Length: 621
Image 1 (spheres, rainbow, N blue to C red):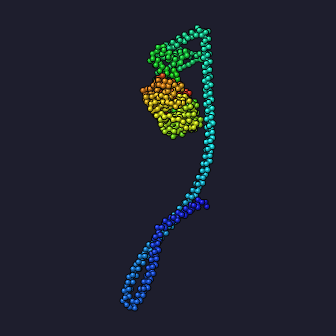
Image 2 (image 1 turned 60 degrees about the horizontal axis):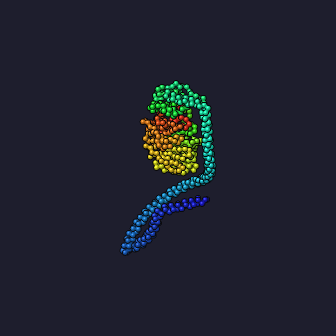
Image 3 (image 1 turned 135 degrees about the horizontal axis):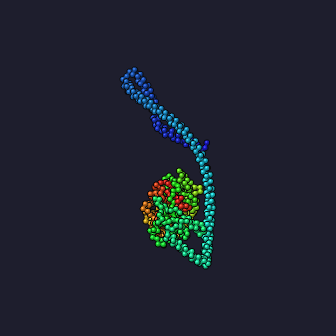
């Protein structure tokens, strides 16, 4: 018998004795009184016997004669009568007490039965308790084994992280060396090319001066003819310097309700042939026409017509390539991968989804498009998504005060960045893939080191941040847009803040051109501002009477060459402006407000999401 079982039995016996003592205490006084009554009855019987003897003696005395004894006899009879009455009362009380004792005995029997049942159930519970103790011991042993295994895995993970960090440092060092070598090679090649050009020009000027002058004069005459005679009959392709024909769009421009552009406006083949024959690009062609004396009104009308038809620069993605339900409810964010044809979307259903964007009519025929991957882990709606420069990682922000990093290859959650006290609206890579900067409604920007998964710097902006961007891969400057109408510039190398730029209303989004010279800013007053960062001032404003910013986090975007700007409107229309200031086209397809758009970096395609849960991919083919 174990010590625990012995203690348990002693405890049960002790409690049973205590219960018997408490239950018997209530009847102890009754039993004592009953015993006293029994003793009193015995005493009265004895007295009655004595009185009977005396009475008999008195009767004998009376029978012998005398008056005195008669009086004594009457007295004794009275006393005997009183004693008999008292004896009767005592017998009655004795019967009541006996009945009470019987009732109490019945209750004691019932309590004993209940006690037996309790003991039986207690025995069963003790058996169950012993089995549970055995299971707990088994779990404790398995927990200890898991802790040891976890410690081993943590040690291995730390070792792998150290090795990975070392390899990353080596890779960055090699990349820096590679860049420096490439820069040196390009400088050497540029010098060689300049030297070769100088030698060739010198030879041409010395040996063929008349030919050089004739060619220059001919090019000047051709330029004047091309500018002043837009209706010339140059309809064939003109060979380039290498002998290969150069082709531009050969069909007449059509826009509006299907109306064809008249010959009075321009002859497209003539313009294309002249520009290619003279080696002019679009900007040089426009400057030449303006220099030739064409009025600004005619030039603007001609430029608008050509731009809308796609004759200058890239054509507009006016065709719907793909349309699908991206999320269970409202979609908030969309971003193209920098490599391949893949789009990431984020919505209020707390998920980030990756979609493979195909080509051709098959996409339109699909009745139900399935995502390539669903990235989970967020406990609230997604506000923004972004890729790193290699397309290997997806960065998402959420209303649960956190940001998360997933890997595209295995769709696993790699890092969770928590520390903000408000919803995180935006995040971008800084010095990728080492650091991330996040902007939140708690009026701060935080810089995170992904190697230690810790916040290494907090910048206090004083206003809620709606969007941000970084100037280059090194992330030397962070640009953030805020609720208080200000664009703030942060230099992380000096930890100083540059001068702010004040907008007319609160800022919903920012986007930076690839050369980091121009910044677009969507503003809540239903305008989009174009800033020249070299001058730190607004150089152009884009608006339309029907254009309305859809929400406080509506996203506008540059195309890949920063010649066009796209932004969604509250009426479901997407507006595309040329950076020169005029509206090129509008795209239909959404039935409700458009929240975000994103241009593909590898093709002339545009992705858009909105409140109708739908994602639409537009293409120029």
